[in-house]
View 1 (tube, rainbow, N blue to C red):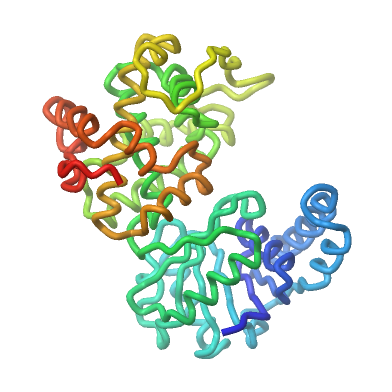
View 2: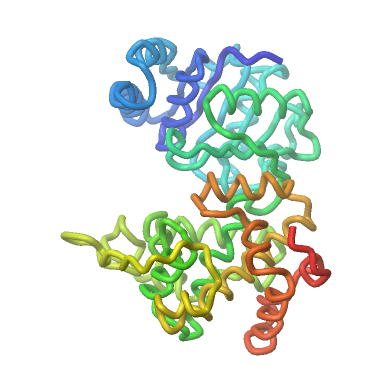
Amino acid sequence: MRIERIGVVGAGTMGTGIALLSCLGRYSTCIHDPDEAALAAAQSTIGESLAEGAEKRWSEEDAEAASGRLRQVETLADLAGSDLVIEAAPEGLDLKRRLFADLASVCGPETILATNTSSLRVADIAAGAAHPETIVGMHFFNPPVLMKLVEVVATEASSPVALDAVTEVAEEMGRTPIRAKDSPGFVANRLARPFSLESLRILADGVADARTIDRVVRIGGGFRMGPFELLDLIGLDVNLTIARSVYEQGGRPDRWRPSPIQERMVAEGRLGRKSGRGFYEYGAGRHRERDPDLGIEGPTLDPSELARIDPAGPEILPRLFAQIANEAAYALEDEVATAADMNTAMRLGFNWPLGPLELTGLIGAERAVALLEGLRGRLGDAYAPAPRLLSGEDG
C-alpha cells in the first residue's frame, strides 16, 4: 500500500511534531484540532521550525516545499481521503475510542488509523472497531523532530499491509521504526521502568541521595542524564501516569509498583522543571554542579572506579544494571520485541549508552541473579529474577 496523504489529529506538541515530519517526508498533510487556537499555534510552530531547521537539518528548498504540503482542516470529515491518519490526542481511552469511531466513519475501510498513545493498549482503543485490521500503534517520542525512534505497535488484528505501510512512512520521515507487541509500555517505556523505579528504591533504601545516584549513573554508567534529572525533565506527574498505567495493565507486578516517594512529590506539586522544583531546584543558574573529570569511561562496573565517584557507587550501579537486565529478560520472555529492537529502542528512545541486552552482557546473568536474590530476601518480590535470567542467558 502506498501512502501519499496523511492526516494528523491533535495540534499539541506531539501532533505538531508529527505533522512537521510528515511534511518533510513529502506527504500531503492535513492537521486537525477542535481548538482553533491550538491549530493556529501548530501552523506557526511548524513554519518557525522549518525556517530554523533550514540552517542545520534541511535545505531552504525542502523547508519551502514542506510548508506547501501542510493544510489546516476544521473538521474530522475533512480528513476523508487520507491514506493514513495519525491520532495524537490527549491520553484518554474514551476520547481515543470516540475519535477512532468517528475517523472510521468518515475515512472508510481503506484508511489506516494509527494511534500515538504511549500508555494505552492499542487493542483497547480499537475495541469494537469495524475494521480492526486497519488500526495500529505509531508511537513517536518527544520531541518528534529530534527523537529518531518510532514504535510500530501490532495488535493481534493489525494487518501486515498496515504495519508495513506505517513502517515505511516512519522511514520516509527519517525515523527508525521498530516492531513492538501491544503490551504494557510497548518496548521503550517498559524497559525504562527500572531506570526510574530502581533508582527510587535505592533512594528509599537510604543507599544515597538523588544527587549522588544521578552522578554515579552519569559518570559510571555513561548516561547523559541521571534518573532523577530525567524525571524532573519529563515531569514527575507525566512519568507517574505512565508508571500507574503500566503497573495496572501488567497485572500489578511488584517490580512495576509506583514509588511512594514519587506519589508524595506529585501530591505536593513538586513536578520537576515545569514547577520549578522536583528532585532539584530550578531557578537562576544551573540546577547542579558540573561533574568532575575522573577519566572514567562508562559504562563500567569496576568497583574501584565507581568508588572514586562516591563510596556508594559500587552498590548503586550494579543494583541498577541488575534490574535493567531482569526487565530485559522478562520482556524477551513476553516477546515484546526482538533483542536488536530492544537495544535500538533504548539507545534512540532514551539515549542510553548501551541497550538493555548489552548492559546485561556487561553485568552477566550470574552476577545479576546473585544481586537480585540478595535484594529479594531483604526487600521482597520486586527483585524476583526472570526465568530467562536464572537460566544464565545474557541476551
